[in-house]
Amino acid sequence: MSSAGERRSYVATTFFGLEDVLADELRALGASDVATGNRAVTFSGDERVAYLAVLTLRTALRVLQPIHRFAARDENQLYRGVREIDWSEWTSNKETLAIDAVVNSKFFTHTKYPALKTKDAIVDQFRERTGKRPSVDVDDPDIRLRVHIAHDETTILLDRSGDSLHKRGYRLEKNPAPLNEILAAGMILLSGWDGSRPFVDPMCGSGTLPIEAALIAGNIAPGLIRNAAPKPTGLLVRPLWERLKRDAVSAKTPIETEIVGGDRDGAAIAIAKRNARKASVDKSIRFIRSPIARLEPPPNALAIMNPPYGERLKKAEIEKFYAEIGDRLKEAYVGSEAWILSANFTALKRVGLRPSQKMKLYNGALECGFRKYELYEGSRKSSKHGGD
Image 1 (spheres, one colour):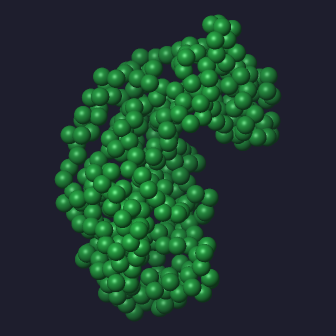
Image 2 (tube, one colour):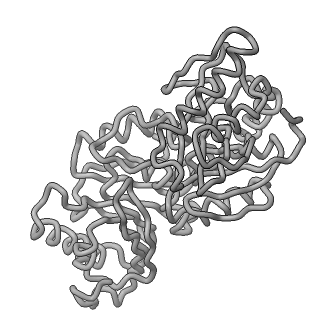
Image 3 (tube, helix red, strand yellow):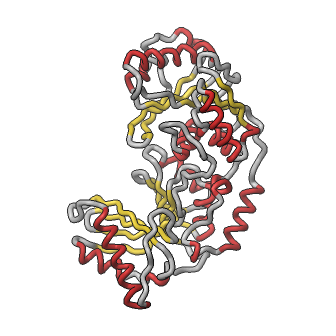
């Protein structure tokens, strides 16, 4: 175990396509040695930086601290490597634990077995030293560990975030196939929106995009809503954590820009309002029950939307719907910018606008296109089949 002022290495995990955004967030909070990888960003910092990462990052899923590396090509080497760690420095036999594994190795062909062997090594060490063993709690453990195996290199990482950071704490209710909070925040940050112009999501569902926009506009740290301390709590320097939370409260700013969420489904709007109230941003978002064809956006707005991909609709219906989205953008959003996320690449072409920017993101397991459309006056004359 090391002191709070000592610099250590960390790994923040994220979704594909959000690595650069996460790296920018980490640099802004004072992290050093920031480097992007595949769905992850490595960085260095002291305990303050680790706490700020858990408290303020919008596009990180977890913040992990590597605590041991070793070579392992079979289960015995894995077991011995885990036993090399003095686990009394990190936990006790009175605390519960959970272990997951990420494996990319010809020596280990599945994830459950390495996780099980890691658990056995920890439990056996405590049993031999104290006569008692820690228990497993997969839902809400005191200490969560990750075993990462790449070829024959094994890294044991301590999860400093506790639960996944996408669980902001405001989404008490959701519609089917809701947008993940991390992805929603990442989409907004990728668009470059900083709260200086109006924001609109004309198909807002349970309100995730407008709520994340309000959190960004108000400089509201997601951890203030989640209100959960970094784990393991046995390592927590509580005075430092409480001071950083007070600083985050002081850093909040008034939300002065217009934020609009529309949806044709009245039940979805009711859910979105309740979620916004839980996030304490309900007074900053105007929710409107309206189909996109009748929703009047604020002028010079940034629009971001996540329309249906067509899993429950016929091909002709979904393509017609995307064409209607394009028609509405050309009619009512002149002078604005629009971004659309969709896994239906054929339907995206029916928008009938040429995207000025294209990105690849994933909504769960679905590969999606994230397209930017700049709605100049000339957009009205765009060919209906000129997109993509």
